[in-house]
Image (cartoon, rainbow over all chains, first blue to last red):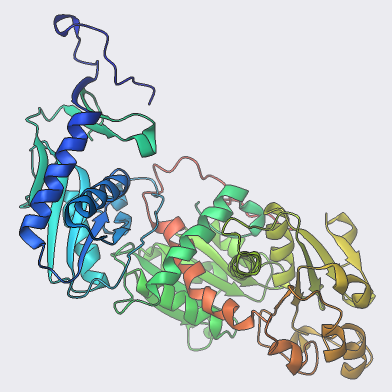
Length: 196
Length: 326
């Protein structure tokens, strides 16, 4: 909120609380293209391949990934979004959360579903998304694609496709902003009380 | 939100949040596995002191689809028939550690009283001639869907719309809840009833009133026909059913007075041939079955709003703890 991506301070003057940019718009674009290649390398022969974003940033990211896949393969891939609010294991410990829409482009049965999220951290979001999918149908396979893997997993979850491995401290927070949702594009890292 | 006792307690954004989530819940109804884990481990008691099919069963389904444990207690067959008071019944159930109580009671204000005796969330499922908030919410939901489908505008809402509520307003809790909610949402409400069935204090309500249905029908975007509640009537409100139909029934002839796009609603159960003709009930613009279909989705949304999070940290919602009378 109101924190600029452009960091005017030279490296040595930065304090811990100043967000530091670790990926700029171009790097993100290149990472997404590489992720698209990787997804297609694994599953290009899948009859039904769909790209499903996890709100909030996973949704525009899924659109970017699908667009990059279309560039490479020359055909369109269905894109959707999956709200996982009800499946969060901390639902009871928070004030009532707002539930977002779930829009699936087609039945997920027998499809290869590529779940897309911005930052992979504890693994709880991905785990909740898997549970949510299980209630909706039975995909042939589920893949996990994330732009940033920052470590500190609390569940046995790993991503199939990673844009950037980013070693972090648990006290830091990693934040992706995209033109579509935030007006600027970049990944920043900062020391913060709130976990990403 | 702590309780849902009256639609007067709902701010516009809260009401819209309930309706928006109901849209998502509606999609769950068409899934193969109709179950969400949102209220796992919560216990909901349906406490019904009055007969009901659709309200009780839709609350039960709503709770179960959200993975809550739901038990039904009706006055018949419970300690109430042995003379236990409402207060003792509420205290007994609270002592068992339940999370929510859905109460229908013939006395106006009973759920609001119960809310003062328990730590559980209380949902008013119809109290006497006072209010029936979830019915009003599902009516508003059905209307919004109708307006959006009719105009093709996915953002269309109630602003600038006129809704007529017709019939036995005096005895109708549905009418009270609807007037309060629809006005919060931006619609204009016109109450139409014979003078004997118009509530005595209606002058203090903010909506328009009329005794002439034929004059009102051409200007409305929706007409909500109320059930003539014979079981609440002790005679003298109108001379004969036939005379009521002639003056205030939605007959085939009156159907022609309605604008083509106007929706027809009825909270059910319908007295066909009395307040609504078969032609109106089965018309293409009749949304009666949509209302029933919306019932589960709306109640799922309400239960999630009440029980979905930790109410102790939910500081924004201290409304509804006292319960107001309309």
